[in-house]
Amino acid sequence: MKTFKSMAVAVMIASLPVAAMATPTVKSQDLADKHPATRQVSAHKQTYGVTAQAVSKAKAYKPTDNYTATWKRADALKVRMDVTNTTPVIPADFPIMTDKVWVWDTWPLTGLDTKPLKYKGWQVIMSLVAPRDIPFGDRHWQARIGYFYSKDGHNWRYGGHLFPDGYSKGSREWAGTAILTGKNQVTQFYTASGHDGGGINNTDFQQRLAQSTGQIHADEKGVWFTGFRNHRIIAEADGDLYQSEEQSINSPIIYAFRDPFVFRDPKDQKIYALFEGNTPGVAGTYECTKKDLGNLPPGHVVPDNANLYTGNIGLMSASSKDITKAKWKLLPPVLSANCVNQQTERPHMVFKNGKYYLFTISHQFTYAPGLTGPDGVYGFVGPALRSDYKPLNASSLVLGNPPEAPVQNYSHEVLPNFMVESFIDTVPTGNGQVRFGGTLAPTLQLKVDGANTYLTRTLPYGYIPALASVK
Ligand code: FRU
Image (cartoon, rainbow, N blue to C red; front, side, top):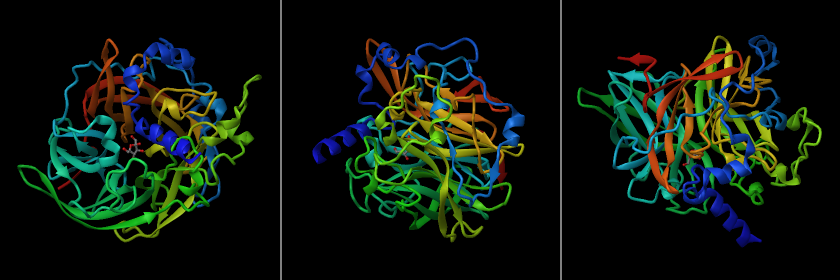
């Protein structure tokens, strides 16, 4: 039992965010046969979200209330690929940002308002990086946070690791948020993955949320950092509001307690963090509710093991406006995907005209049995941080990979101007061959109308514009 379990989990995590190892043998035709919903890309918009008026009327709660919105099975059944939500195919001869490191999950240095910043004329992005000479699929177990800087927001120079060696918590650094406060103070929130000092170990799934503060410096030649010597764990899965690692023992896909996204809520001006979690309780004991299922069509059978898929988007609040010192308190999740999807990764938020656009990334292989959808970014909209979120485009699919390149893009972040940055994962090059990306993909522009989104433009590779500046 134990062997079977650990093997299954090891296989899952090996292919977890990238499916890189499985890719050479996966042909798009096989995927089409298994996943009819992703078979065709329609020339017309296939599903429409509710009206802007309906979004405004959706019920709003206090951030501390015990209300969790749901991504319902009935919503996910509406996933359809069309020209408004399908990522354009990336040519196999895409350029790379650096030949030193694989680059994947990326987030810009922002203010608490989530706007990417220009600091003394430079923009900075943080990326998960690993040496480019290790196999692409091994990168998660050696992940560090690296940084890049740029004058124009798309020609990026690699600056090295953000933290000095040996100081971060865990045995590797996973995704987070970098926030500039004061004159030059940068606080990096991140996932301390693996046990402290655990070395390279792909069966150690512990995940905790951590933070550390340093200073940014810049001159005409570039950007560098000092500090980041004090690191502290700010949250752990408690088994009560969020599933703990122990409770997840029977889960076919690893549990999550990762990817903190820190921001100031424009309504109450308090500071919160979203993160990826799972519904608490021993895996397999959850009972799917009517609110998880929605209005299902006749004949839709919910397979018994759908209850093993319990992703959610967690919330925690900071005790003070000084993020360097604040204590963090877990609150109930803002949204759950029980019986729909096991992973709602890298959740993040865009605030626009009083509306809250909640985005998350997810995979085809993490959908509960009886459902499917492409790897990509999914989204919801509501009138408040905690509210009865409505799925964008009726299904919540915002941008999915094209059927002929099912693991082409991943780890999207929707910026405050609805540009979407992501990285190139694996691109088919013909004859069953692939090229691994490990570099930023072309940025895509969305237009948002009520609860509907439209892909309208392809921008340069890795384009992340500054939307505010600090002198
Ligand atoms: C998404 C992700 C994150 C995690 C990181 C690990 O691509 O799975 O959830 O922090 O990658 O590499």
